[in-house]
Length: 263
Image (cartoon, rainbow, N blue to C red; front, side, top):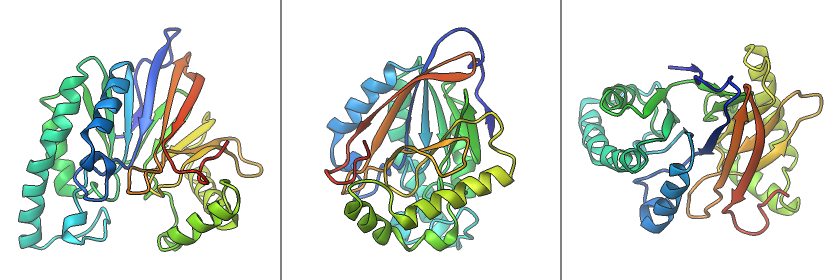
């Protein structure tokens, strides 16, 4: 499922939060280790009309050393283990949904939870939870496009995470040359696919590196990256308001360590 969220083009004001790379269930995730952080997030979710979980919300692939490709073919033994993993983690998602019954959740699949078997199980799961929608590609909310990142980040950047991180630290918290090239490639890809008509903001995750209002030269939309809840806790949570199909207010809360923040 992908497309535009309903009711955001009216004169009514809608509030939203976007977050990604929670990796609930992973040993390296802060949300696995500390229930207090998740409880704080749930309180934030309760105050919103819409919450976009922008990929890698549940950690499905990591325990099995699966590369995290959406089209990965799993052998029978691994498939059975993944099924058990899914049944173990879905109650964590259920608890979030039931704690926020008046909030609409939009679950974007990522590379750690985008396997066909999980997509199938999650779609069935959503039938029993009216406040959950599941998306495999991207979704538009107002004048913003949300996509996890593994679908748009070119493969050549997959193994350069540490280099990009080092560049960020050396560059006083702003994207370095390699990261800027990556965002240029992402923008060009989305633009060539005709995805950016009427879009002024692009929200992605995947890289675990927060970005606030970064625009490549000549672009018509700015990038916002929600970071991630890894051991380094580089999460950046965006909250905003939408009216008449456009974002009229946007703020963010950095949870990243000093040196990675972007002013």
